[in-house]
Length: 507
Image (tube, rainbow, N blue to C red; front, side):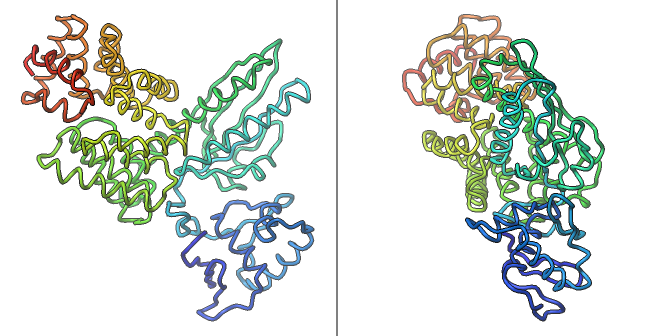
């Protein structure tokens, strides 16, 4: 529910309370006021007649004619500003108010004009039978439900997006009518005993295709494979939309960016595993939080950067960074307790206390809120491995890499997989995964140290020496104590084994 006053030309709406003209109340009964509030909360997007009926008359069967009566009353009360209330014939209504999207906030998260927003259309059926038509709607419906878990993405409800069933949808028209930046559409084509599903993510403003993919599934097993297809699409959108948003933000000066733009610009720097990039990301997150103090994800990003400062020893005073990581994580959860990123960083903040098991409830909560959250699966994998639960660590690491195969933290996912083998005594497998992790983009000195450890345990002396040299070249003073400060393994026998292996190579 919006909490701020909303300017409608010369009028001011206090949502669900009253409409003012030059500070004086405008005579308006409750139902038209509820309709106006629902339209204002949609931030310029289309609100269908059914959605308005549900909002104003919940759990009641009301004829559409009743809605029309109150729309007429609302237009009369708006007076000269009635032109702001647009009828989208055959669909519903929307408010056309410049700047409205930048001033309405919901649930402690930014709902700004630059917040990513998406409409998922029903799949277009190319041939096939009635049973295939059901699949063409069931899959996008499931995608809408899963995407709605992502608090950084505004998702148009099925009732609105499923109005667009044209053989060749007008993507620009979808964007204008629903007020969205992105549109996901595609086709479903039965062929022999298989279904071919093709999807495209398109920028509704430029009509440029940002991402696309094609999935094949046996017809008789479509319900078994549907969850895999949905997870793959969700993971791809989680990667490609932020990358696209960050690229767009680089074309503007920071003075011209709002909180969402600054946030996405920070994301572009935060995963690069250098002190300089982490500091730059921290500065951008701080600017985002300053421009909108209620933006939960800006505080989550600040927690992430302060965690990195403490974990990687980017700054001399790690204790202050630990406190800052926890403080901002607490604030992010306070602002939006249902945001998976906020819960994840609160879990990560517990890593810094040495009581790593205390992180699991928060990481589990992040995965409950979004089961397709690759970074939460990775965090679970590392936590499991440090707790010497190697089998669970392997399962979560595999899940993370399957969900996001080109993730900027893929090196960490593979490093966690290496440690999950190491704690189980599977040294050859550990060394193989550690080698891949240390060679991956964005890898850092602690990952190289994992490679030293795993190669040493596997008896691969030459590889262990090679990575030990790389570690000392990047961080001459690093020690076995620094390794265990980052990875406080639970079992004493594991610590003794790992200590001996690392000390044999000068740590």
